[in-house]
Amino acid sequence: MNRFEDLQAFVAVVETGSFTAAAERLDMAKSAISRRMASLEEGLGVQLLQRTTRRLNLTDTGRSFYERSARILADLDEAEAAVHREHGELRGQLRVALPLSFSVRHMCVPIAEFARQHPQVVFDLDLNDRRVDLVQEGADLALRIGHLSDSSLIARKLFDTRTVICASPAYIDAHGAPETPDDLSDHRCLVYGNVSTPGYWVAQDDEGKKYPVDVQATLTASSGDLLADLAANGMGVVLQPTFIAGELIKRGDLVPLLTDYHWPTTPAYAVYPPARHLSHRVRTFIDFLVEYFSGTPYWDEDCELLNARQS
Image (cartoon, one colour):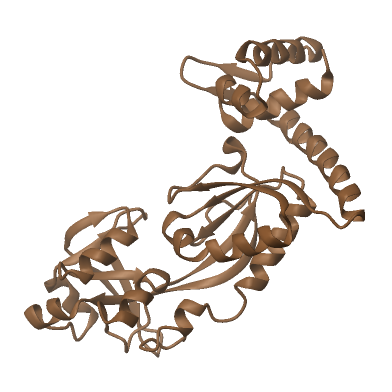
């Protein structure tokens, strides 16, 4: 058996979570993946994976061996990339996990521009608002909006994401506008459910005093786009990131409320696992995104009804 191909099979199994998915990634038969894994474990004399009917789990030895194997394959990939760089080319696959709502609106232009600059780079994009396990799913990097709870990831900050309370003109005409954060408890509120504390909104004044509010959710959804559209159609008050609400506010479909208060600001990062050697194409793409999103985000600059102030 080819030891290099054994490593490829092992890394693919770990990162995809199954023999079937690894076979699809490597364009091999599932039986060939099984043989390579058996050959690898037999040659090493240790068990790398614990197999159950539902999933595969790494043993402690397997996790250590995976980290080294991933680095070996990444080093080879980087060596090949170095040859191409000498000829002015950047090539290979970039597997990127992206948040859905943000990326549909704001990642098309930077990805298209990067692809024009580096036509030999092939993108594999996973758009999903759920939190992706970068190792298990084989992603080179991810864009994450929010405070990072996984301290094992390496991160580079891209921008700050501001939020705004808003409602439609029709809703305000029918129900009035809240004058203080506490007034929100008397309003129909549309709540984003894909967070740890849905319906718990916190405002802050210029002096730093915080005003937490437990709002009564008229509707909860895991899609910020749906919530913004429902608010624009008069269903209630919504707390939205400006990268979603900004366009609707510019059009007059939504009106910012409680603008004397600061609402949560969360950072956005490009993150990647430390076990993965950072290839030149990944590093180049991250540098490109840092430059592209530098300064005040354009969705805040373009929204004239909002001040570009940070909380």
